Length: 308
Ligand SMILES: *Cc1c(COP(=O)(O)O)cnc(C)c1O
Image (cartoon, rainbow, N blue to C red; front, side, top):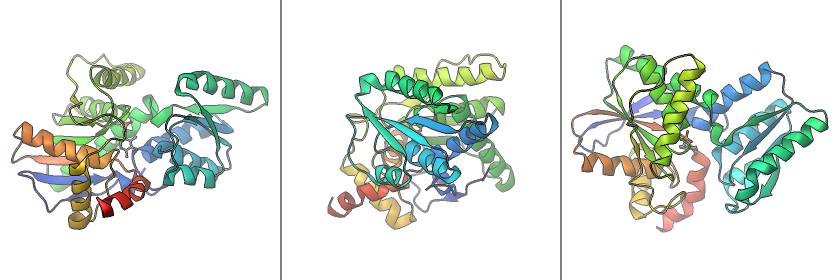
């Protein structure tokens, strides 16, 4: 696996800011979904599956990356997609380009539609592999334990130690991986997931469940701590919603640092992080923001950035 660069920002916001560029993972525009998908495809390879089924909306980074890797390996790929979030995006156009078959259904029928497709493929003699939406599950968690280990390696080699890690939290798999990495390294960073959609208690509970599921899979004891820093103060009206400040921070980051962010994940989380730091009076600390990718979404946002 690749170790992505960590760079210092020129902007400080009263702290020393660094960004880990997981958006630069060299597969299909990178991002956390590329990290996770790489491990899922290793599993697919190991058990000799010959087609892939997954789930996500038309803006899904996960579906674009899974489609791309499946196409590169010549594996048929089926995307179950909710009718409710159906607008055309750079990601959905690429999914077409990769010739994945998109099956649309109401969100209430997703489970059934996935089951039916899996059964149908088996009847036709295929050995289908289901990748959970967003690359959720122990394999996805492992991907961010790997990231945590890369961060520890960086700290040791550069003598720079981080007090906080911030990132955009969606399904919680990325955060679960980082927390497991922290437990396995008996390390003391504060890991703060800025929720981009889910509210507590559900959002934080899913992270905790994912942590415990992973620990169980390697026969470690369940996590005792009740508190997961899954911050739901900045979700606005929910998934995909953003405000003027988010547009401003995206422009600033691109102009001053040359780093693209987007309104759904990384730009929203970066804004949430800044607000969190202000509110909690965090100052003089070494802070690492993990750029979880989503570069095609930046281009969906571009028109709005120019006009906004
Ligand atoms: C999916 C995604 C996230 C959220 O990751 P989870 O592991 O689902 O919490 C964050 N940023 C980007 C760009 C994503 O595509």
